[in-house]
Image (cartoon, rainbow, N blue to C red; front, top):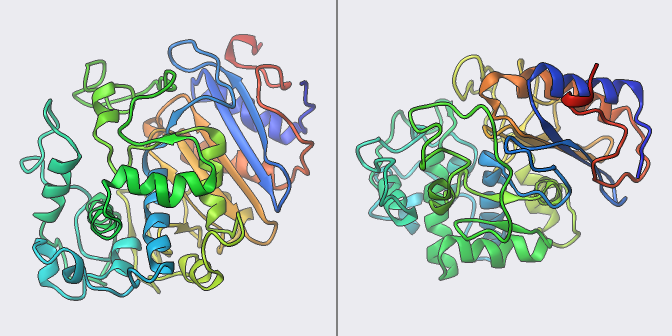
Length: 374
């Protein structure tokens, strides 16, 4: 189906494809209760067409799914947000401080570092989720809880262990039962895929172009990391962020949704690594809040109360409450080049200004991939 895109959205999407040296992109848009719309163009790094069924490694957008699993157990009465870590994982090194709570783990103010130490879980053949979970349990605090926002994969590893113990299943099985199946999401965590995943360009680091390459290798996918390992479709990424906005109705209690999308961090500063350090750095229970952060992957037009998450694989899933608009952007290049920060805000702003027209994903939406650009 051919879709006539408004000039600003066309310009933003084609600009990303050209200036980010990216072969393809998928965009999903949902407004209120309307049927989501999907726009796709180009191919992945291996030359495969990007379609509505493409499976993207969504990196830290996985944290939305992990947080939803925790919140579902909260609604079931098995957990409370202010439970101390010690109540559920008493052997965890960080559990020695009773101020480490589920609330602080979800909002990245627990005082834990970004990752377990390399020595505790070497990235090498033989690594798996149980070993990663053990490394998270053995990770000490980096600073006192509640003193800084420090984005932490370790914290979400501990949350996954709590979900496992409370649900009585491996985390990947619990995630399927608590989140993916109820939301009708096609997604995979540590499982074999029914078709090839989107191959990403721009992977950096010592394991690039090896059998251990992040995002693209079977080894990386096998780790089932609850902070980064999910693979899903554009519709799946869109559904995860919409779940925090009450879609579908009844998936989470209204009071839980209100608390999850409220700033938990006051005026605390912090964030990721430079230049993605902000003061203040608002965060909810799983979702990041836009606030007035700059630079950022969501446009200022979305407003301070907008929320969602980004992924280092080159994706973002976001929601703007005043307009009830959710969108996801998934590229075929990792975010290491900076394209997500520099280009995604323009796409988001164009989406907010576009009423939409029930597009369907394919390779003929009026978008010109790089090979067709003049």
